[in-house]
Image 1 (cartoon, helix red, strand yellow):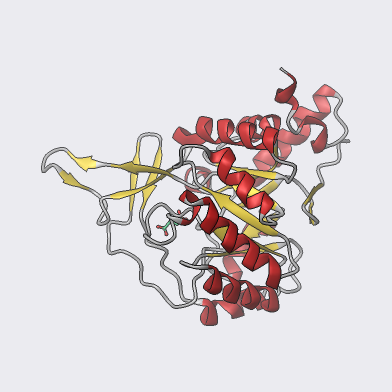
Image 2: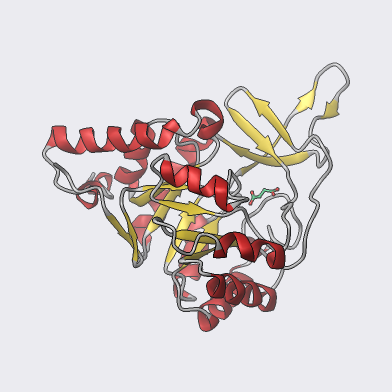
Length: 302
Ligand code: SIN
């Protein structure tokens, strides 16, 4: 029987699946449901210092191969959200608080809040493609370095930096995060995209441009995980278009230690977690592997 447990920068995961930020991570009760369905860790919706309404509708459009969203980082603000994290204090699976801000001071402030509330790790959203001031952080490695370094200096839980594919060289950005003290990176956030209504010629999203998630971006995620994990010592979490266990295996082979699942919940509901965990287990069993780590980055040998 293969061991599915994964040690992710000190976080003990019972299997390699995690809930991705932005999907069902808005309340403790929803996150409980996701954990019950099999996810080994949950990432909250991205939270900022102040409440934010986000953009007006339409904020999401379904396209043939995924979803394009421009929510505009809508969230209730850290004061209101702290209680949701506190309610998960005795939770069976690690809670990763996703936070966003426009500068290192605010990121540090948020990090201290969520750690005090009981978050087991922090994911830095420096890569939301839809909000000015946030999307710029991962485009500018010196700014990114400052943010990660500042958060690291005020927290003791693992820091995970969520990277954007909307850059020329994601490895360069990942290296800056690692050098600044990030304990892990998540690759990738959504890919800048757009949909237009052909009768009127009108962009469908209120924000016009948004971020594409879902099956279309999985090969981009695989490429990014592969390149980053070859260059970095810290663990990489694969995220982007995972809709079946084969997708999860592909990301593990590319070098991911764990995979995040988000958009696929729309297609397969919460049963996706068990489906993927069972598939990984059988894959390992059939090939005589004893643990998940045995296949992490296996593709690098070729
Ligand atoms: C949004 O709120 O617009 C999306 C968040 C993200 O992609 O990080």
